[in-house]
Image (cartoon, rainbow, N blue to C red; front, side, top):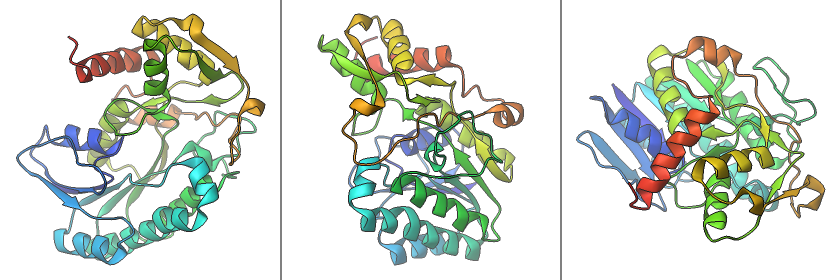
Length: 300
């Protein structure tokens, strides 16, 4: 199968590339500022800025992928609020180009969205709940969803929540907590913001399964609901790090530029029924994370 992946060097994208490399797929993976830390026989790395719409469209038209996995995005929530023009360019206009070119070559499109399309007033949202983003990031991702839905493409919109894991250039919440605790430094974690923390490795496995199954529509693929503090404590316990250094904080204490949902946790019943991949179990996710983190540090 010929598969094209945007964001191939990112937190999620490089894990999808790694999973796909285990089979005989022909993979075209986009990278830009950072290199994809993987090599395999049929992997073609393409250095291309997502804002280069013509270049992205030309690549899709040339490669004619059977599947496009669009997981690249500008995900800095406060950054999107401050630099709305850039957020629109990457999260909306680039998606529009990918949809346009994918329609021409009749690709199956997987669009990775976010739980931040919801306002967070109630939590455990299912796929049929009406989105109501409260940040510009959430708005741009929702518009991306609508571009996909309004095309005549075959597609799956995947909504994860609070993706974490090893392997990307910048720290995410989990790796930030680990790094701080390893240095015996205190770390604050919110008791009143609920999410569904999603390990990149397990999410990638689920997306590879979605490539095979091709379920149409929206699918929530995420972990179990918990607040940031609960997640940090579980993480510290798994990593044998001092959980007493984790300090409780509240959203009102944060100096954010963009609003965050109070509870953007996702109902994952539909995906659990459809997929064989165990993408949701916290104990499995944290054991996997521990193994990968120690390996990244050269510890067996």
